[in-house]
Image (tube, rainbow, N blue to C red; front, side, top):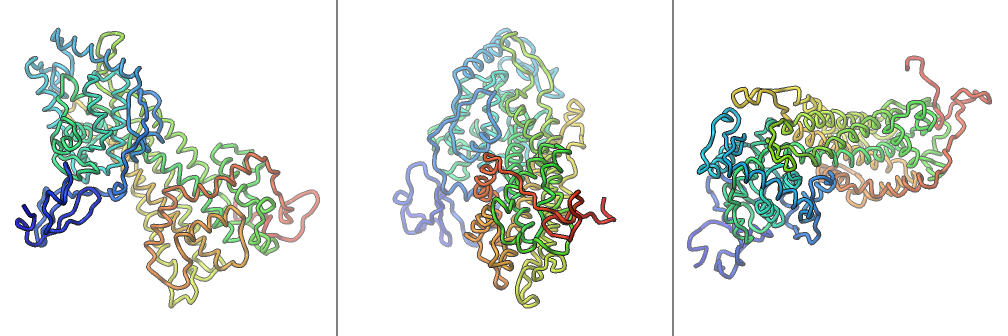
Length: 617
């Protein structure tokens, strides 16, 4: 049959590869086995329950290639970086033999409880307010399916494929610990779905973060039992049972306790939190490089990064940031014609946005380290209820599902990382303001005819302002749920989602600063900056050309943002930073005529402008 016989004004598109199909081709000729097609009718009215075939960010999956490498999970040794890489589709999953043995022993406890008809929460009873309702043996399987269906009550956009993969991978890691009571057979089915990239439809909203992330994890489980919607690179969105079938998989048939094992835990908060902390670390490292480039353009001094200053206030983050600035700006090691050009000038010391980078950026680094430590513990923790202790042959009800730890940590992360954008926006102002930069207004020639970076700075200001609202901690809130049984919750899901939004804004503000600093370099030519910063400039110019006159700016901002997200700026500068560290290069300390020494009190120089204003403390 021909598709054109059924649709007059339409186009058809492969869900795999997004290729358009000719309406005159037969379905048999155009499609391969188990391939799906999307039909769009011109002028049709969108159904309120329509699910687009491509979720947000799915363009990254148009080049998806099934991974060949495996990562072995045991529930104890997963890292935040591993989880992000699993989300990117770089690995398949398998269990270690030790994990398989623990899962089997844990399941034996559950089988004995069912056989002996012991009353145990969530296995032979209802849930929450219904914990005292005993369920007959004949309905124990139905109990688990009902749990998953009823708890699949989330709303909002679906998680992207990357984030769905992270959530699924993290739940597998927790189940591999052997405290959940899931059968090895069921866990292997979950792993097969992951390895085939069969990803359930998981709305991003609906969790209060205790008892775990029930709504999103229930949507995860719903797809695995063949209900609801599911996505894969091969099929796009379709009914879950058909997506599984297309990959040669069968829906999971839940046994007693297994529905609860799949949905009870903090994995939504924590998986998003792992992405947040990894992206935060990446942008924090690169913020030092961007700020160093700005300092060069604004003809600042390196004196504020002297080791002795930071040795008497030895916070680890502060010390490391000061070191990075020295490694990038040391004019004796990496000669800078820009630095030499203003060695003698009439300025005294730099503004706080440059001089205080080690102190401000430093605490952000220490915040990220603190949060990452909590995330590392959480992703390798058992967060079920009840917990199954095979060695004791018993189950114990507790509260490991409560998301307060990751919720508080991610609120703190948002507050900390935001400061990178706050200080960056002020440096952008200095770059654009001719009275502060000694550069053309808004970094463009023929000002008036051209507006240059005028509105790019406004965008940075808008993002910083939005972050101020997003940084209000969600974990200070709690609403009683489940008829006051779950009477204190963490609100960690929102903490994780808004932390990611804050971090994206930080990346975008620093992308604007990076572009502005490189544009500033154009007005200082033919002078050159240090070797590592010239490499950064060359990287930016490989994707964004200089502004000679006004042009569409948003694509340039996105290109610079992509450089930061992919850590290209760090990759260019890191070899120089680490070489400086390895070689223990003596610190460059130009004589500072404005600083008090026993030898001299002479004329002002820009290189040593340490003379303090009387109104500064």
